[in-house]
Length: 222
Image (cartoon, rainbow, N blue to C red; front, top):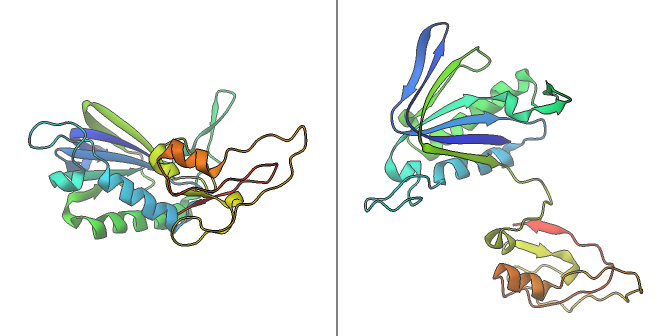
């Protein structure tokens, strides 16, 4: 799932010359749903959108407040073209969820937003319609969001704190207390970063065991 979030002073949607939805200050969300999206990706995106800090606080400090903190409005637009793959210069949309499935999924997304925020502040366009979307971007501020791929690694130190390396042994609830796993190295075997090294890089000091050798490394996103 992909989303483009724009901080706006106002935004509106027109269909067939008639304005069907409008908001004042808040965020406009263009949402692209993929074939592989599930409830997990939906809930992840809802949390990210509602907690994204793109507004200033009362003292004028930037990037301090979310749309919920400020009690601003949200305008959502279904945007399957975000799932575009170029074939030469021609857009291809085979990764987008088919219309008959996507409409129900998109409606569930709106329901989750309203459930987690104030329903009257969540607006949307018209699914599947040819729309004119009028956005007055404030800043401009535009943030791209994407639900994490299963098993994907990250270079973000804060995200690395919640990634545990299976090669270090078993995965108890708190920390890694099992004995270290080691595999004899061959002269040409690449060296795998130790859990201790990964812990230092990410600030996750509880990763205190090491593993060497050509053992496979997997990641769990907790």
